Amino acid sequence: MNSELSELLGDLVSVTHRLTRLAAQATGDSTSPAAWRTLSVLTSSGPLRLGELATANRVSQPTMTKIVANLNELEWIKRIADTSDARAWQIAIAPKGQNALNDWRYRLGMALEPLFADLTTRELSVLSEATDLIGDRIDVQELAA
Amino acid sequence: MNSELSELLGDLVSVTHRLTRLAAQATGDSTSPAAWRTLSVLTSSGPLRLGELATANRVSQPTMTKIVANLNELEWIKRIADTSDARAWQIAIAPKGQNALNDWRYRLGMALEPLFADLTTRELSVLSEATDLIGDRIDVQELAA
DNA sequence: CTAATTGTATAGCCAAACTATCTATCCACC
DNA sequence: GGTGGATAGATAGTTTGGCTATACAATTAG
Image 1 (tube, rainbow over the protein chains, first blue to last red):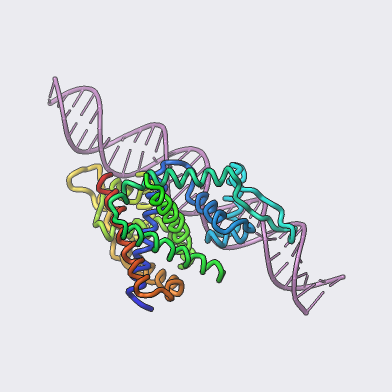
Image 2 (spheres, protein in one colour):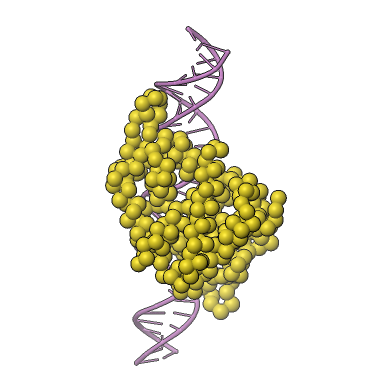
């Protein structure tokens, strides 16, 4: 175990904990990070079974059942009976959900932009690459799950 | 408003949302992200008033009162009466809390390391720099609060 | 066909999040 | 010194996201 890597990962996760809260407060709205996270996963992965969606979000299945029920009431997602298994549901993002997610991302960008406005083009590309690197690690874990 | 920056910030926050959950599941323990976040803030900032700690964590003061009460029961933090204001408390991390945080970071590093093991030295330094860049943005916001 | 496995809903519990309100303390001003 | 306004933190109440355990129906394996 590489202790420099461990240190970096500890710092990275500490910083992401705080950025998550910063984002929640910055837009000042009442929709939860879990909702945005779920919509975001659906946007990038396409429709998923409820259990798959739980895995992708790293929450338990009953938790995801509850989150999906809330999103369904808002009509932000669609529940589609899975044609190959009568027990299962396909969960897809709905147009309203896509619009809401896009709006949130816009408002988030507006709110956070002043904080990042002083970064150089090089620094921004560092952030961009890091985002991709982390995103790829998360997706790798999904495949292994 | 720079739409590329907005896009990047939306992606960054989406990815950090998911990394936060990945970290919570990866270590499999019952202590919440809020507790770790709070201990982490206290480690880097030193003792803070309860309200300041709430601001640094981007949560409301009553939320922080509760989190601090839990941490106090675990003896992970110390509550010290503020000498200059009879209403206020200084909250400081206690040795038990520091040990718990260090242990958590170690276990987190162990759990996440396989995901990041394939990164090159250059990629790891990208992550490291990004972590610093984000961390600096968060601290800037604190000063402005 | 039967037993084991699987997908999701339900139940119950806890903690983190919020707003509103209250009480005691502090501070500014007259 | 006294009064009014502001502030620090506790308390109350509500909602939602987390969890484990369990139930039931559908699917799969032997």
